[in-house]
Length: 159
Image (cartoon, rainbow, N blue to C red):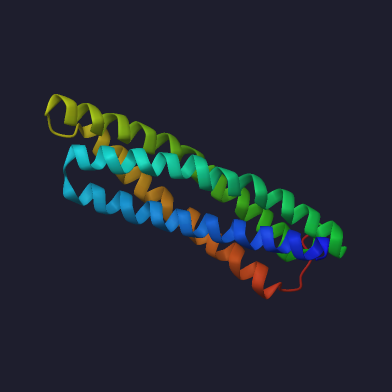
């Protein structure tokens, strides 16, 4: 087994984890929210936060490391257009993901408090949910763009 194969395998698995975990988290958070039940939302958000820290955060570390090592192994310059654009989109995604993690933790806490006190979900929960929802679209689109760039490897140079 070559170093290239191991790096590529880890890179593809990391990309799949990012895409799959992101889609799964969004699916479960939206379905939980639609119940309107604070206890259900709190339970789902608790699991979602764990999944984000366990799976997404691990993949967030693996991707740039394996990506950089792959570029070195294959002799690609980081300025190669599709690589540079992938890095930009990766950072763009991260700029949306970090606040989303905080929002998920805050929504979890607000829903847990509402369930514990048997009160309706507060307005802050609803505002956070819509911000969380809105942040998902550009981040998910950027991840899809990265997948396309990794597969197509269009030839252009940014710098």
